[in-house]
Image (cartoon, rainbow, N blue to C red):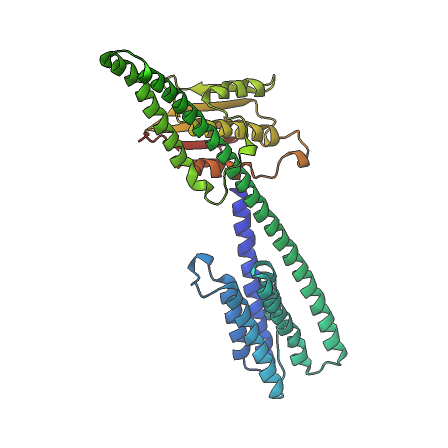
Length: 394
């Protein structure tokens, strides 16, 4: 919350500073006795491009349009005023707008458009001192051009660096989601294989019983439980596939990625292995919680607890009390892991993970129709909460 407030304050300060610089532009133009309309047109188009709220922008107002229009207006004004033999007066506001638009072009536009829009903004910015001094050979003009090239280079490098960070994070998130989907595929293979194996065994038993020379009545009585077991196992297999296969549409099951699957019973062993002399972990499991929940839900709950405890070690090694809660509420499985840490950690930065564990958990939980929330507790500490709907098998 504090970081969000700090971002809001910094953004408001930046907008206020930009508006103040634009006021200086109007003051400079008025003091020289020139028409303020060219400068007003550029500033209006630039401020609209920069300050228009993202959630209120129409579909046609793409980054390319936002960047191109102010640059074209500025360049057209410079060329028109220069050809008319007048002086193109400019101020820090127009220069700052061009640099901000250059930053947006390099960081957010598609690659080809980034080059086109960035070049257009750079040319529009560099044309301002040329229009003011109406000469390319003047020493002051050359000085302004050198300073302008330095500023353009710095802004372009910063935007390019941030764009590379955005790209790497996008790739990392995509790879994390893909890995989690492959893991879900492996789990799905385990679930279905378990049920289908049961169907096969019980079918073999039924065939053996059907081939026996017992009476029809006794054969029917003996076959009913077997057939009921086959029906139940087949239903569970279909339910497992229906709940998880949707997330696997773009990645096929990878049986080579076969891995052990945890369940609710395994959470106790997980907690015992995690506990230490300075960290007490308490499991609060509702005695009424059934043991026959769908296997994929149990595996996802196990992974939630596992990842949450791992994050405690990574990011809150100073936590002394950790609680794990498991209970059912309104046909939903509730999984809550909370700690009293204050953010202290004994791990080096390189060992704290890349922050993508929750991305994978979210992928897994939402694949089952559930929700995952992670955030600070009231006062101090951290909490991870997962909710899984428990649909009835059909």
